[in-house]
Image (cartoon, rainbow over the protein chains, first blue to last red):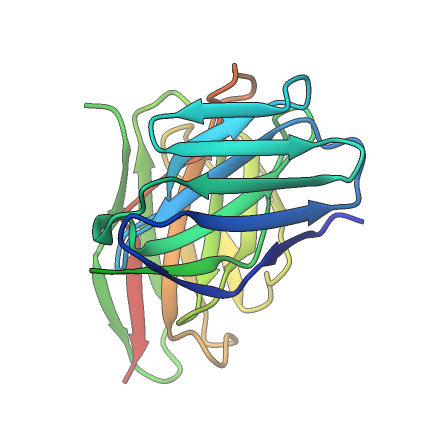
Amino acid sequence: QQQVKQSPQSLIVQKGGISIINCAYENTAFDYFPWYQQFPGKGPALLIAIRPDVSEKKEGRFTISFNKSAKQFSLHIMDSQPGDSATYFCAASVSFQKLVFGTGTRLLVSP
Amino acid sequence: DGGITQSPKYLFRKEGQNVTLSCEQNLNHDAMYWYRQDPGQGLRLIYYSQIVNDFQKGDIAEGYSVSREKKESFPLTVTSAQKNPTAFYLCASSARSGGTNYGYTFGSGTRLTVV
């Protein structure tokens, strides 16, 4: 029940396209859902986060869509660029406690 | 600038040797975490500490030990009992509460290789 399931494992998108990464959870007590971006050889960095009281949050080209009834949330990267090529992790937590991470999605944006 | 400093960036360990990875933060965060990342894999939690002088085992604590004597420091020792220690180790910290942008701050990692 503590797991966060992430898909796909890897994704190839053409430059200018939309990248979509999905996550699903079971624990209805989760109340915080961040996304992290990790470049090779670096630590993950917080990209964008959402609380369950809103269905969507947008920051620049990055959007989180949240579906509370389906217990799913997704990251959309609009106008994907080669510089977006990285590994993306979704995560969830209860009241700012220990984060539970998804298994990661390796995104490659082809020029 | 506030952040997390991990050292060394690269570390080589001989068979049967204990090594200690350093993690220091100046963010005044209460909680600190250690993760292991294998090539192409996700993040696996080794140990975490929510307050000084207290820590809990994560999912893969066997062969590792930690201490939390100061709020700023959370060193990880990889002992000889850890049979497959070659990996990328990440330290993170977080505040006890936060707004919408609450999250972990990660260090740049230590790449440990057994030689």
